[in-house]
Amino acid sequence: MKRLETQVDLPAVPSVVWQQLVDAEAMGSWNPFITSLSGVLAVGERLKVRIAPVGGRPMTFKPRVTVVDPGQRLEWLGTMGVPGLFDGRHSFTLTPVGRGRTRLCRQRTSPASSCRWQEACSRRRRRVSRR
Image (cartoon, rainbow, N blue to C red):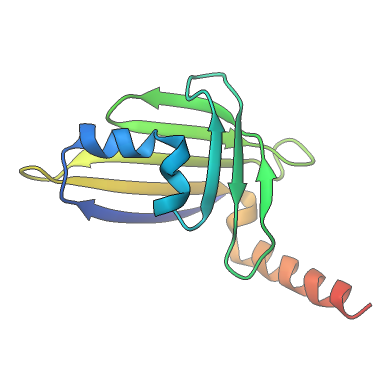
């Protein structure tokens, strides 16, 4: 499994950051990768997530919510094709980091996150585009 992680320190308390994070309608305004999100943010529920990877084609998938810990963590698991092979776990974790500040950490864990997988997809894309 490969993990991609990004984080940013924000000038707001976790409860304020959480409210922005779970405002599905606004997610596309601050997240350039996830352009829209709809559904109920509750464990076991399915979401509809539209992503726009840089240099790739936009796509929609329907992950299942696995963790909702208000003010601290939101996580979902998406599957595509063969179960387990293309599963992707996407999480947002909020951590207080001093007076009135919050660290927002976004992680994506997936076998498809590996460099070799990305390289294979790029090769496949080039091969298909030549036809």
